[in-house]
Length: 369
Length: 183
Image (cartoon, rainbow over all chains, first blue to last red; front, top):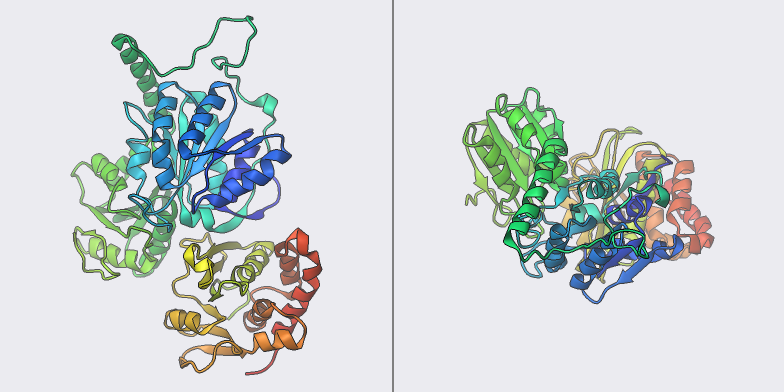
């Protein structure tokens, strides 16, 4: 570990990827992710890597597919509409058991939406990155430091479980600067072997085949089930979260990414008002930290989920809580970011026994859905 | 305001006035001082000729929301920015304005004002384009958020490697603002 440097989240993601042994970046510009690609365009040539601006997002993800199948750590990055386009390629990577890093610096949607921060791609990231039965591991960092750290882990887990991994951040985290201690660079020789790769064996071994097509239904079912066995292993070992002041909390806030920072500020403010509140911050969104929510059910009288969306992660919280406690929701969407004070107002109502489902209209706290 | 106290700062003005750069000096100084810091720019259409602003948090604890909604200090480099943020400044806070650019505004009674003719001063001292850094100097003088030495190191870090000839003028602008005694 070296000294701290001041970097944008987007830049830290890029530098961390290079240090994790990624030498192949395929992208296409889109706000608020562009600094990542711009950084790669400067740095990759200096480390003997490939920076390639593809003709489209679809082309970029398919280059990641090809590069990864060839045995190399590869990545792409985009923002929400661009990640929709990558959906097909991500599904193919899942189907071919290919590692690879996909970064989504979310902006408001649907459609072209806007360019301000959003978390409206939670469902896409955790449920349907593409068609078919399958998942990707999803990291949701909340600081620039964690963005850098999550990239290294994403590559590591991608290789370990042979799966694509997504880092899901948003425009706020991508654009902000914080001090970051970058991880020590990995030597390319030390990266995990990929004995399954198509890397030109000159007849020295049995041919490898990287493919997502199974025309015999039984073979496809077998492949999917084998993959889901790995998913069970991932769920058992890779759930990550941070708990903050939950030990005595009557109300447990649940928030991830940039929204969790606002929630954290709200916890501090609400505690000063005598409201016993804590925060559970999922760090992995898939696998969702089910065990952390479960462990909070006994202590908590109620849960309050806050996101930058009309309510997506709240589904996962409700699935765990399963009616045993009320689960309230408070959010903004479309690029508007809630203030800590707004979250405190929502907390006051939940602490007083109310169950709310609230997305304020024009900033007024009256717009119950 | 005590040296070392937590400080949420909003720097605001037109795109091109060096708003983000000014914020960066403060952020770097906080980092060199070993504190928790965050720097968050407004991004998007504002950058292209409209208003630009930048949130900087200095804290001794991990920073929650990096978006400054109730600043302890507002640095306003034009009138629209002053008007946009004046009512959000925390009671007892500080407002630093470039009084060459911002005139004829209504003042709050519960705020300490520093009206620095930064643009005029920059021209007078052949420091064109450094009104932003003069105002950061005043921030330093008014709050003691860091030291001159650390802010100079922060300037070294903030000025891009291609423009190292600009570090000396930036440091002069900083000192000018710090020592400025006027309104």
